[in-house]
Length: 465
Image (cartoon, rainbow, N blue to C red; front, side):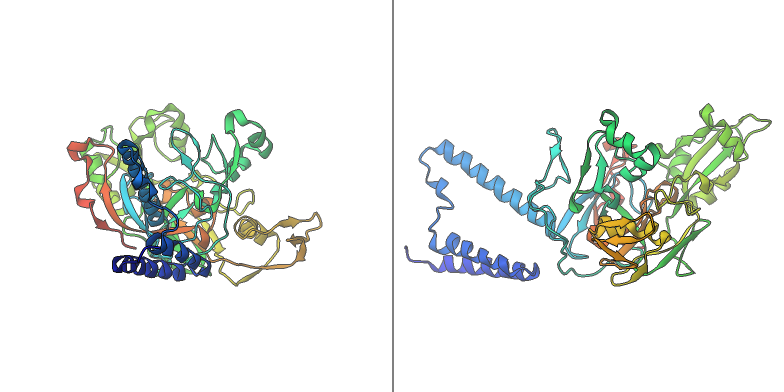
């Protein structure tokens, strides 16, 4: 063995300290066995880790050098993506105007503590499907259970949170919206399972490979949440409404068409400008809402999402005849799927949000509200016998104690957000991180050199409202 130089000792010591601190942070002392590898890399060098540098052919040496650099970069990106931050693009308008379609975010994994990956062997920077190849970007084995290491904080009320879509545990490959459970409720289980030409394969996805969603945390573990006429109540008290909260409104004009300048003044994207009166199929709906004369729709009627500020501006426009909020019976189905509660999108609950260590009785209503928590999220077998008896993991039970904390997430664009009102709770093990910075923002309604880059949003911090 060659004599070990002072520089080798310094390099080894620096990397060993970093690695040992990382192992302590991960709360897994088995990782300390990796120090043996560091000893060989920096000191003993029994294994020729950089043997490719001795290749005589310069072209081979150059190719191997490129491969070495690419592998190092992929490993570094993988570790940063898992434990430090993740890049995320806002794809939908559910959080307008707090976050806009086209915003690119840095999502901090350190804010709530990074999760140890459920699927540790996966391709970096790809969520679940490799582009072009259209195959899984991860190996299903090994699959680890939930573990979160310490972060610098916890989820707080009104935080904007990135999380894995809870109802995305099972998907129909060709039709992923609505989610599998609402799809089964709408079209029938047998039809969804057997009609592969329409729905595709039925697939399971581990927690960390489910699609990423971003919403605002409205309800905390242990809260009782209700919504009355679009106002959220927490434990019987009015909840704070985000400054940029939006609802859908039907706007009738005196015959005038709203201009591009007016839409921009109101902050309404092209994709949200719906001239519903131009579609004859909306005639009965508009008559039901009180628009039209003698059974005819004679003036333009728009369906537009608007903030309170935009709403006041529209009401002051001389060409606007009337404005009506979209009624709640147009909001679609609500959680829980397949159980009638009478709840709607705008009048929902009261619903208790599970808290770790709390116990519920296993009656019919609680089973409807919380069976997904018990079975899908906390990985128990749950059987309900014809006589009403409940078996959990093969044992008869009359109550259940929750293992996780749960959260209730909603979008600020309340009438254009599929959120906890539609698919239920977000378990703590689904929480990914917290958006902290908008590093790029692109307006899809404009060309790149004509206002397509929203310079005023560049490098803007994302704060809870």
